[in-house]
Structure formats: structure tokens, C-alpha cells
Amino acid sequence: MSLSKSIKNTHAVQSLRYRNNRLRSAQHQHGSMIVMALFAIIVLTLLAGTLVNMISTSSNSILYEVYGVRAKNAAQVGIQELAMASFPLGTGPQQCNQVIANSATFGSIAGFQACEFSARCTTTDINFNGEDYRYYRFSSSGSCGFNGIVVSRTLSVDAMQEN
Image (cartoon, rainbow, N blue to C red; front, side):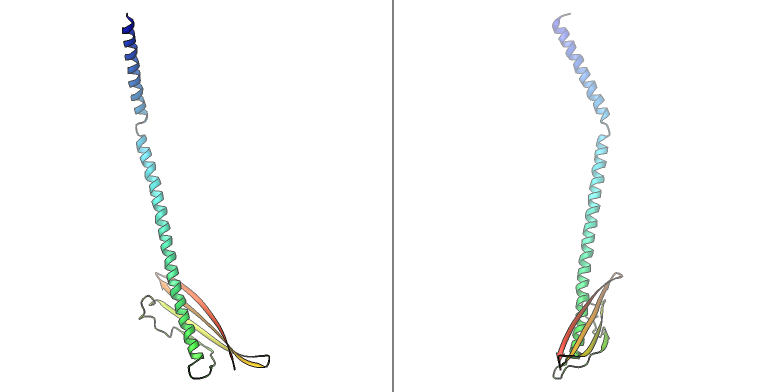
């Protein structure tokens, strides 16, 4: 046998081994793309779920904030009504020991249909250093509801009038 024939046979044997190894390697890897694709789908699904949860939480916090501002405004209406009754124009300060509940109608105001308030006023006469004062304490709670959830805010205002 000649040297060139031996080199050709060796080359042919190596080529066959290489092809067999490639086939075996491809057979061992058969199905690995399915595992990788499944892994990618699971990771992307978890990321999407987390994103949806974050958006939902953010949306709910904005709703609570908006309805909290509306409840605060409803409570301010109660304090303003009591203050107008306690300090009417053209006359002196009046005694104020009363409770009012939602005397204003919010039904005609967009966004305030489910809002209400309850306001209380107390008056105390005080003598300090020989001077007479009238001390007013106004407090009001406003609440607004949506989808079975109620958001409320309470405000208090103190005033003192020299007699």
C-alpha cells in the first residue's frame, strides 16, 4: 500500500468519525430548543404578570388619592357652612353648638355624587387675664365611596374671638 492511499484512507476514516460524532451530538441536543423556548416563555410570563400587578397597584393608589382629595373637599364644605353660621355677615359672632350632616347636595356636582360630610361645632366662653374670649372648635369628616370602598378625611379648625 502506498503512502498516498494510506493518507486518503486515514482522511476518509476521520471524516466518517467526524460525521458520526456530529450526528450523535445533534441527537443528544435534540429537544434542547424546546426546553430553552419553554424557559423563555415562563420568564416572560412572570415578567408580564409582575408588570400587570405593578400597574394595577399604581392605578389603585391614584384612585385612593383622588377620592381622598374629594373627601377632604367635602369635609371643608362642612367646616365652611358652620363657620358661616357662626360668623354671619353684618352681626356679631354667634354661639355654635350643633352638628350638621350633608346639608349641601353633592348630587349635581360631577365626581361628588357618592360624597357626604358630617360637621360639628362647639363654642366655649373663656376668661383669660381678665379678658373674655369665645373659643370655637369646628371639626368635619368627609367621605367618598367607589366600588364598595370608602375613603374619608377629617379636618379640624380652631378659632378664638375676643368679646
